[in-house]
Image 1: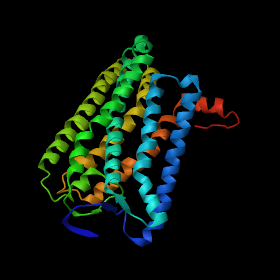
Image 2: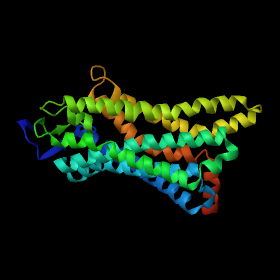
Image 3: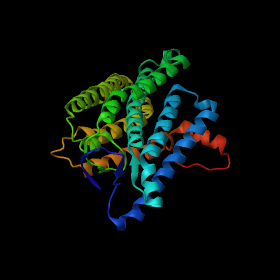
Length: 312
């Protein structure tokens, strides 16, 4: 449904694909990914909560990451599942603004919590003797609280400005959820202020700042690892950091292609695919990355599910 420069009461979310023959396949694939994401992250959360051996700073931040993954997948994928079951692709204006705000806040928080995890790895590798003194319970709670607060505050101005527009050239969003980039393309008013704010905030606050604060500690970590004389010691130190580094590389790669690639060389459809990878595949992979190759989690699962035989 197209509207000619008028106010919008609701939006129509097109979804991943508009081809009828693909709808069943997409529904089954999305619900499979969502259930794996939900199950994997819930298991991680339960193990961390119930097993005191996992009450460490690293797993405290992993628990925060699992909460973000569950929330992000739910807020973005639920419309795909509901529209297939009900056939209704409509989303009210307020609901769309709310979804934009929550998704942007969760995405921001994930970047900030990964930055906190980078600091945790830096202390663990470069200053192991003072690790528990530096990364105490109070420090972890302050870092996590600051990440949550900053994540939700940084989206307020963008959503307030976005919600103030009443003139749209169309109410069809070429996406599977209400994301700010495809919505900006529908506004028929002057959005130069919003574009500048989005560029500055997205580039510096949401990308460069957490990127630098995440990877600079790894320079010191790599230098420290290279100074370790034994091969086994170097492997153990690298193994400690590899899950976090893998998640960081995956997330920043997809976000850069999703938001920082110029429109002239990247279409909305391609950005939609990167968005799907970011909101569905990455949250599904996170529990696997942090658990399947992690000795502490394996031992915790053995303690909690004693009858299960775990293999490498």
